[in-house]
Image (cartoon, rainbow, N blue to C red; front, side):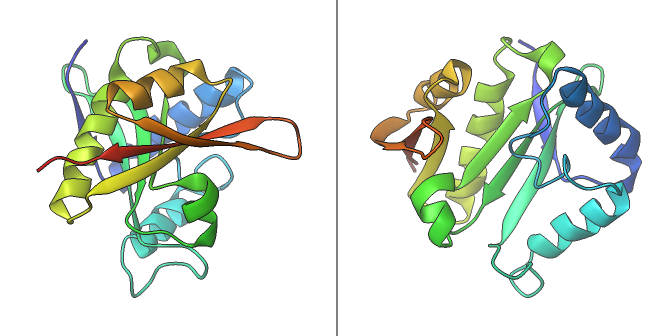
Length: 177
C-alpha cells in the first residue's frame, strides 16, 4: 500500500474531484459517503465554498455541524484516492445515526488499505482537537467499511433496524493519547 496524505480541497483539485465523482457514478454509486454532498452539487465552486463555510463554527450551514472535509491523495503519483469528512461535534441526527466520520474510496482503488490509512489519519486530527472517542456508522451489508472500522479499533455498540429493512451498525473508536 502506498502512502497517502489528506489535503483540504482547493480550486486546483477541481478536475480530480469531478473525475472522482464520475468514477463513482460510472460504478452505479450515486451517494458518495464522506463527500459532504459533492455527489449532489452541480458546481464544484459552490461545493468548495460550502465546505469552507462548514469548517468554521461561525459560518457553518444551519442544522449542520462544523466539519473538515479532505481529499486523500496518493503521494507517489498525486492521484485522488478517497474522501473523508470529519464532523467535530454532533447534532441529533449524527448522535443517533451518522457519527463523526464518513469516508469513501475511489472504486478502482478499493481493497488496497487506503480506507484504513485515511481513518487513522483522521483519528490523529480528532485527537488534536481533544476528542476522546468518535462514532462511525455503516450498513451491516458493507463488509469493507465494517472491516475498516474494526481494524482502526471500532467496537460495535448497537444495531438499528431501519424502515427499509437495512441494519445500521453504530461503532465507537477510543482515541488514545
